[in-house]
Amino acid sequence: MPFKLLAPPGPARGSIGASDGALDVAPAVLDDAHIGDIEGSLGTISMHDHAPRRGWRRRLLTLAAIMGPGLIVMTGDNDAGGVQTYTQAGQHYGTSLLWVLVGLFVVLYVAQEMVTRLGAVTGVGHARLIKERFGRFWNLFSVGDLFLLNFLTLLTEFIGIRFALAYFGISQYFSVPATALLLFAFAATGKFRRWERFMLLAVLASFVVVPCFFLAHPRTGPILKGLVPGVQGGVSGTAILLIVAVVGTTVAPWQLFFQQSNILDKRITPRWLNYERAETFLGAVLTTLAAGGMIAFAAFALNHTKAFGPSATYVDSGWFNDAVRTTLGPVAGALSAVLLLVAAILGAGAVSLSTSYAFGDTFNQRHSLHRSIRSAPLFYGAYAGQIVLAAAVVLVGSSGLLGTLTQYVQVLAGILLPSAILFLVLLCNDTEVLGPWVNTTWQNVVGYTIIAVLVVLSMILVISTLFTSVDAVALTGVLFAVAGAIGVLVVVPLGFRARRLAASTGASRLAEVRQLERATWRMPPLHLLARPTMSTGRRVGLLSLRVYLVASALLVAVKVFSTVVH
Image 1 (spheres, rainbow, N blue to C red):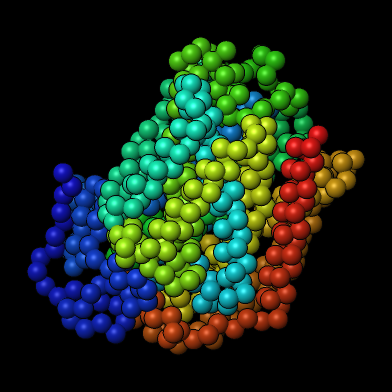
Image 2: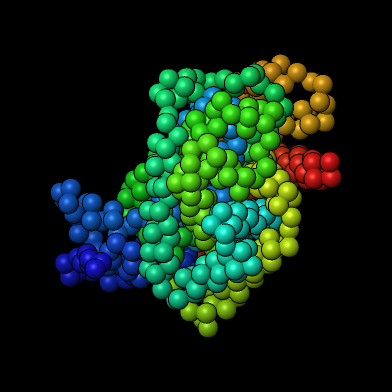
């Protein structure tokens, strides 16, 4: 039974413009279903609760009630495409790419921590913020990318479901439609708590990666060696492609849109932000460990077999399950298939909801799991439509094409990620939006460093693909050296100058909001915010980045086509 946390009677403290007894919600909230008690899977917190949390028991009970958005987004990150990408990395390069996950842990938490602040403080979704602060043009670009990438990602989830249940002899013509119906049934109950419980059960089931890891008889030496940067057999264009895919599956654009909106849907306010941060950090740790476990599982399971090494063929995740059965036995093969199935269900549930949330934000439609189908028909219509279409495409697709698509969707996500992170960093520096919650200097340094590294990785991929004779190792060294020099000589000085300018022009605004408690300050209604100024340099920079990334994405599409044809 869920517990109920209640505060002593008394007036609630509201946000800007609220009077005694007003609801502790931001006036910017667009859907009134996002106003009310926190109804979590493991407990309820009253919207009027302002009682202090003293003692570990009280704090842990509060964390349990808050728990959900962070764990779901992080665990859903290790989706069907993630399982294929991580196991392929282990099959091709053993444990030598584990070090990539260490760096990605920082990227993952920094990005999602910014999203948690935006969600709790603003009261509106990520897509709506981009639309209001950057205009419809950039909103259509960002949401257009998201819709396309989310649909392709959803395809990979149903591909995973198809391969996972085929291992047990279940026909795709039953497994795919049945899973699609299950996903819709749990989302469309009109009860947020029911959907969250379903997803958290899947999170719990994802721990099947632990017995998979130990069944492969792991050794400590190779794992520790894999934490040191390097690539087994040397850096190559293929290795870089796989590293970009690992980046794309570990930190994907859909995660930014999903968690921000899911925080709103759970009705988490700034008062509970530290608990949401803690949950997100825990989710990042578990996700990184699980991803490393999958790499090690494949590395140790297939080592010393014909299926191991960069030249070995990785057909698809269904092939991998059969390979595990051959080397480790039927129990390991079955657990591998279950791992894939759970990952696919988690991913499909989160990715499809991310699209529906963004749809509601963009087109001003009601978008909450607290609502029934009757009160939010377009929200649930968008949810059902993408699931039905993705399931239909998977049912008619060939195994070879689906396996190739799964890998390259992760690459595409890695290529499009820099622009998503850029908009995130810009929003987190907007004092009208976040007030006293804006990024600190170190958060901006980390954020822009992440963007630079991702852009360099995509450039390495593009150049290596166009000019196959180029030495990938030398190219990597040159591009990172150039990026470092640009950062030290140009970007860092400009960043500090922009920060000083923002501080001076927004001094009165910051002085005003800092008079208020951070725990109660939330963004005012969007129409009351001062319009942001978009300099010519920023417009040119954003457009240049977008054009480059779109060109890179088209190059990936050409590569997929050529791979399938040959």
